Image (cartoon, rainbow, N blue to C red; front, side, top):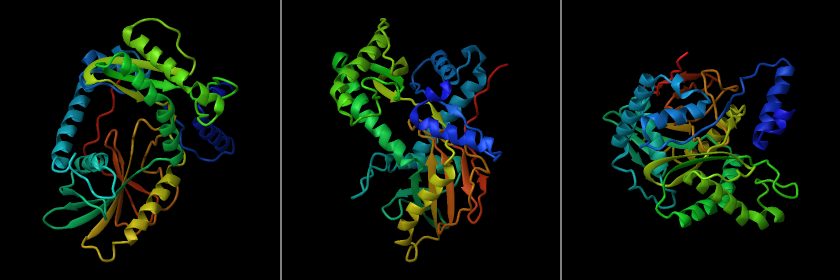
Amino acid sequence: MEYLDNLPEEQKQPLIDHFVQTILGKSTEPLILSKTITISNDASLEDRILFTAQLYNIDANSINKEIFVKGEKEIADSKSAINEIIKDHYKKVSIKGERNKDDELISVGKFLYTTQMNYTLTPSLLPDFILQNENERIGLEHTRLTSGKDRAYLSELWKKYLNGTINLILKEIPELTGVGNITLNADHIITEGKTLRDFKEASIKKITPEIQNSLANYILSQIRKTEIEKPDYITSFHFHDSNEAFTLKYNQDYFVRNDFTEIVLTAISEKENRLYSYKENSEFREVWLLLDYGDASLASGFKVKNDSLKSTINSSFDRIFILNSFNQACFEIKIGSNKLNYIAKKQFSELAINS
């Protein structure tokens, strides 16, 4: 019970559900606790290994340096290839009525690279993208697998606390460079029984500037390597130098979700509504749907395998793909079943740990 009490609110229910299913003797997926950290591109090899070790809570000396460097080369090669795929449209797309497509372009670029599909890529309005080669034109819809509750929570966290914190830090050190990684305990009681997630409560609103100041002061102390008491609602903060302008990343410990099937079905259903508006009269041989996940800033995640779907997937899309945009694993849903086929050819190598 003490372990449960110490978990953030969004992690408690998945753990309870998993426990109940196990007690009832029902088959369940393993429930996995993970965390993320952001590493600057120009950090030294030693720093990159050190921060990776912190992420996995292991000794940095246990990381196989040769495999680590190989993995970094895979990432660099991937970035170069994806830039080549999207270069004609990246930072140039502005479709009236549509949000900036750069993030989507990157995801679709990763999809084409990891599957080694030979198509040119063009942003569109209906559908989101057009894939084309000498033989065919494919319409591609794209969406992210996220929970609306997660998005709303993180949006408020930045709006109420972190954006103001960054402003205070840069007011103190305008030319600051480097990357900060912070994790907060949003369930720690701060005042009158209220926590960081009680954004709308008067008692929290009243002290929000104080919270921002406290966060900024602690972060500045870590950057300057001076000692001040860490606020109880900060779980961890790490900083490393770089030549890049200062950025603050929010890194949340998270459980791999057990509502993966539900979120996939919801995402497909929402995109089906767009599909009906143009598919019958379209010029495309097929229309595909790309679902992607792996945004480490979200307080949730998925561990996808061939048997991760618990329900049959029926759809008017001709093909549906699921991409892990973090490691470039990619699966295709076998429509009319609950099976996933692994199709990635350029997934990154996993970290090797010396015994």
